[in-house]
Length: 126
View 1 (cartoon, rainbow, N blue to C red):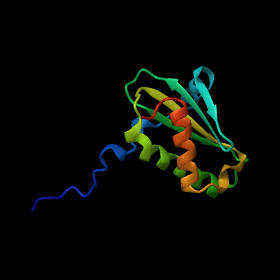
View 2 (view 1 turned 180 degrees about the vertical axis):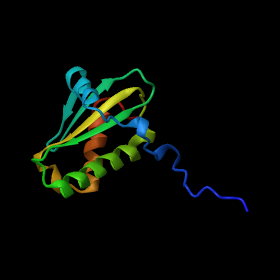
View 3 (view 1 turned 90 degrees about the vertical axis):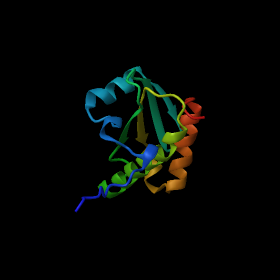
């Protein structure tokens, strides 16, 4: 009997390990050499990485809330980025998203509109 692959193919909406910023030095490079854009609840840093793919890093301060709130917000930011990924025109950028103090109570639609606005302001979207 043949074994079927149970993983679903999300196509362009997937979010792989190679598309994540994980190390502190990667975040520090983006902070120091990148361009910053901000709204009331979110800050976004953008830096060219010359790797051919966009990489995302999310940082949420303890000022935002307890761990449950911070992890929920991080998941919302990643999901918004994942859903906007197909509309990104430019590739080869490191993007760091920082949640500000009031961001803990945001809904997904608010997070999505903020990320979309910041990315279009940074000229990354169609």
